[in-house]
Amino acid sequence: MKLSILDSEKQHLAELLEAIQRCVYFLDASSRKLAWPLTADLLETQKKNVVLFEAMAAINERFAKLQDTLGAAMRHACILAGEPTDSFLKVLSFYQKTGVLESVESWQLCRTARNLAAHDYDINYAEIADHFNSLKTLTPLLYMSAVRFLNYCQEELRIAPKQAEFS
Image 1 (cartoon, rainbow, N blue to C red):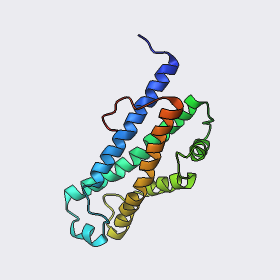
Image 2: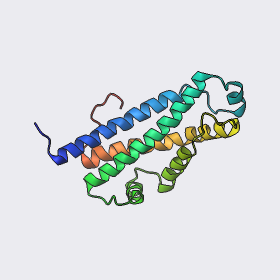
Image 3: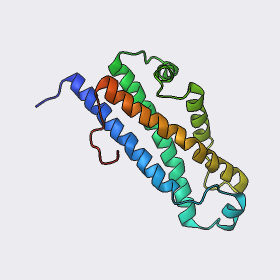
Image 4: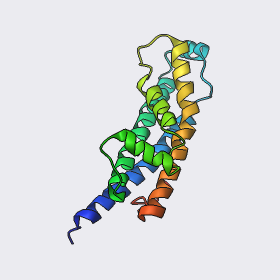
């Protein structure tokens, strides 16, 4: 049976919601592999520790993926809710008003930290440690936004994640 355009859009949001849950699950798993906070001394003495730096790379990637996926889902949900989406700032403002986001500024802070990602070839271990410690500090903000967004979609749009394996 062919889905209507609206049903197809709702299914897409349900898939995005599941993707958000997956992002949280795997970011949390990667984060648990490290002893926090990271220090410059640890990173310098362990500079050839592939397991450590792979976990850090995964955290960088998964933090970014979570925010990107959450942003895409928020825009999509706004469309389904009939809210303006001509600028992402309007989308963020809408979710601040609904209580999904703590603030537009907190979202932008996460975006800025994510964009200042330390590179694998960077050798300033203090800056690398600061970057990852910042991501660790900001991660709960994204987690809480994700939870509130999933609740918003369930309560206001009656759309839940496609599968509940990662809830």
